[in-house]
Length: 121
Image 1 (tube, helix red, strand yellow):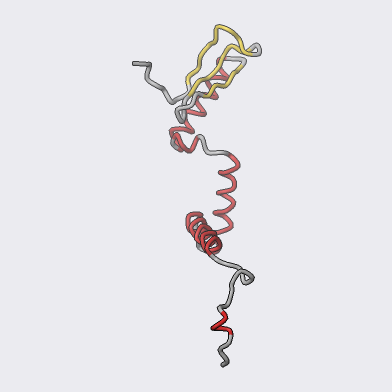
Image 2: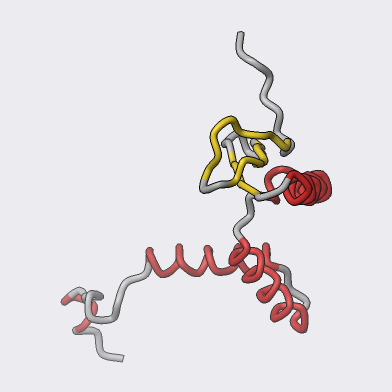
């Protein structure tokens, strides 16, 4: 049985420096190891504390959220607010629209049966 996985960031001193930096932080917010290197123990501790607070505040999945995706979501929510709609409603609407497009046909591909075209109204 291996060691238990600790998701929070911890400060460590390396035996071998990485680009002259011996202090680093190690964390596994989503099960994947993430390291960052620092010149001083204080800088490493400050960053580890900041990341750990963010993880506790937002949850482990939110820490891995891409910054561009988060900004896009904020922008979308702001733009939908005057209409009283949410991001979930917009996504559901757009997916339904895409499914309708997938199942629709163009006017060129639509063929009228000969028996129906001869009916005079």
